[in-house]
Image 1 (cartoon, one colour):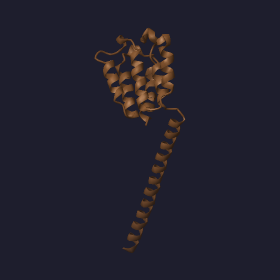
Image 2: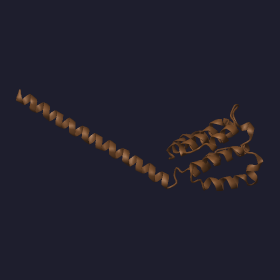
Image 3: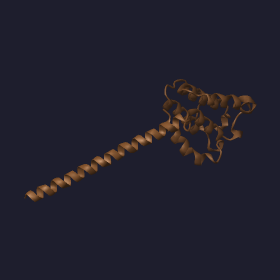
Image 4: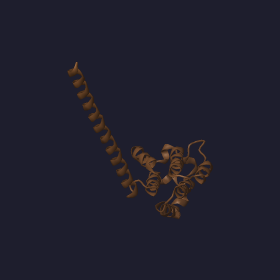
Length: 162
């Protein structure tokens, strides 16, 4: 009887050590992932201005109004490069929407509603949702064909903004 209890205790010890080790690995892995994301964001790999520029670059040039080509693009890109807050990001999204031809939007999409939502932004998550709304409001033919393959990574990076 004593031998059975001894074996059972040894099994519990091994199981406890295994669970402790597995828990430490999980905590370490999560910390490493958070650290990597933090470095990527602070190094500019996933910053708001970069994501805005990526999105604007994925829109076909023919989807823009003539004002985009006569100074609008240069001014917008300069402003997007200086985005430093959720509010300025939302302003850039709203501004970009104003340069897109009305017939490039899906039926029922309202630039006015997008602008209103942009004006209520408080966080990067809010601003990201406004940008996602613009992206979702465009007809597929408004985008370059390469957008379909770049979109998932762009969305992941957009969701990482804090």
